[in-house]
Image 1 (cartoon, rainbow, N blue to C red):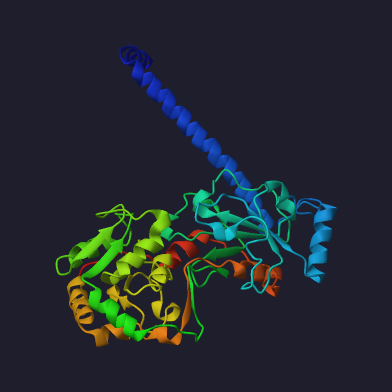
Image 2 (cartoon, rainbow, N blue to C red):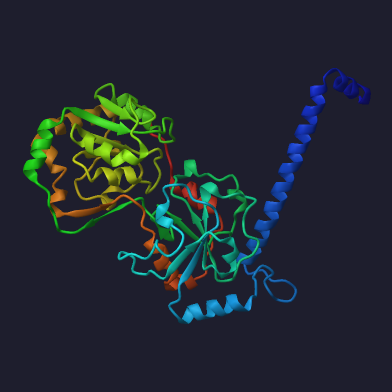
Length: 396
């Protein structure tokens, strides 16, 4: 047997190098996993109140300055420090470092600071882990007893299914996502009634008369978990859809989105605000943004639109039995101004439309009594993936 292997290596040198590469890869993976598992086990002991032989928790740094600061914060309205442990994508300017994020009129609590300086870990009241940029080998080895470790993502589970989930038992204290059952609920946008309408009904009629196209769709993600592209393909058998973006006839530059939507509103009756995943409460900025323009948003997602949108402001594609049935209804709406205008009645009431997450609630939560309540997610994978109830569209 030994001579057979040696002879094979002599005849095929690549066989030897392949074996070495395989062994090296396996060894590296085992070492990385062991390091990560050891770190997580230590963190689990901390979460569960583990103590060493002297009765002290081995991962809680008993630094006098840190403990005095926390003691004072319980009695005084001191500023809360939030550490961004993992980096954020571009477009997350609503979580700028410093105090500017919370220092505006809409925040009831403004005494919070965001930092990305890891040297301030042990003085931080909260540590924010952005799931999409988090590494399983890059988690803090220490923490204070009062810290809240926060699971943060705005992506739907199909696009944020972290391969280290199974190791992260009892790691996070809070969640901060778009889901309504998060500890810190951070939706992509919101609408607020203001009773100050400047909407002009006669202008709406003029805009309606000038429109010449049925529906438009702006998209750059062509193959999705929701299978929205299959729905659109079926819809196009009965209704013309003009697609812009990476998957369409032309691209709207990222810094020209509002300009593009304004141009669309002069020509199209409907805007297809279709989500890339159908998951509980997942409604992105594309829906809120469309409400600012003279187009009716046609939605396709798992959000409770009736609870977040002005009444009568949208058409829900999934509520129809088929794309064909939807197309028939859209033609009826577009051809009848009385019916069409019903979808804009909400604008007479007056609403402020926000199409960006508002992190004020994070600072408010850190200053609330809830901050002093012990909490931990035993199985974050179950909460985030299983309980989001994500699904694909299926043609009946």
